[in-house]
Figure 1 (cartoon, helix red, strand yellow):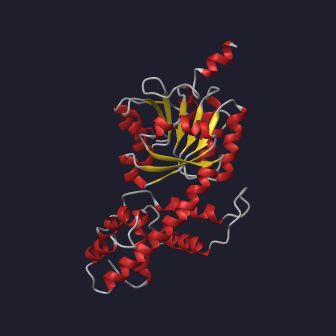
Figure 2: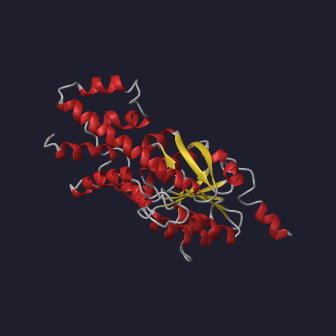
Figure 3: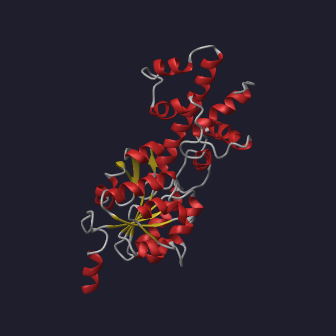
Length: 314
């Protein structure tokens, strides 16, 4: 009984509140660093892990602790967030039996994976967490670096609905959560989101290239159509960056190539719709950025592919 009471006082379902709930954060990139910083600023104790410790320097300066492994982060935390590059990274930082977060998390602890990852892996992580007496939520986000900075991300959460609801005080500092269904549902939602984002970026790039070639004032054009049916969050986020040739702000294009690849995979668990010709085309266009040596540029750099195809040099 004493052991059960101790577990109940740790992690879920104990009350989440600043000064009491300890947060772990694994992955300090553009998105993860901003998100962890918001929780730290809200008064939560944060323990972080980064493969390159220098990336966590600004968090340490703001009061975070730095751990030397994901397992060490988890041992010091009630809730552990992961925001890493790809499914292989998720598997390594969560499921490694020696250094992974699940190896260090006490029963009752909660894993929250914000990486855009595989639905089948999310289900695997949830099952492993359950077997260890812990909980796992797949909660990828949409909204880019601006949403991460401003706390306005769309959070697509899959897992136990009660655990997702319990995380609300933490999610409130990051954006707006929506419960999407059982484990894997958050990741499936993010993949579907990325299909829509990719199509919008392709449309934005081609429309601006066309407008410019037609002799229009591209900025005036964008301001006019953004108020009509063509307007979108993608246009709001990326339009000005395209016009100013700012291709360095945001997430690298390789991530959406990865996400679209997951959409096109066959046999990944419960996903049945894999004939997605638009997604295949979008992935090829973004892959062309990599082929052109621009793999470290961000999504809005896609206009360079359109320009090259049309012999336009900027």
